[in-house]
Length: 106
Image (cartoon, rainbow, N blue to C red):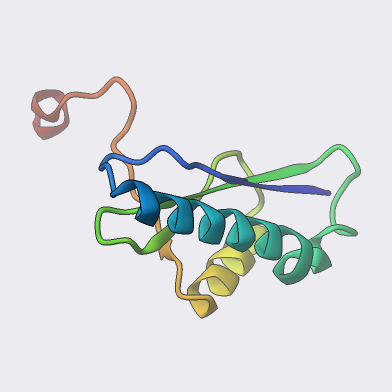
């Protein structure tokens, strides 16, 4: 299994320039550590062609959030959620693409 963690540096909000640099460095370090240290045990699991892609970003309250962006088995999804939870990361909740609030309420 190939594990890739991507730091999404663009956010929904604009922090000050000095703060943005510190935040971006912290996020890139978190992505690197998550991929190479905390999720290292997943490298030998599954088939060679399997991929796990995780996005890391900040929410407006400056907390790191994570999202698994491809389909993976439930046990791997649970393992990632548990690992990220221990690190203090929160689940990145997103609206369904192409669904407006009016359509969702009907």
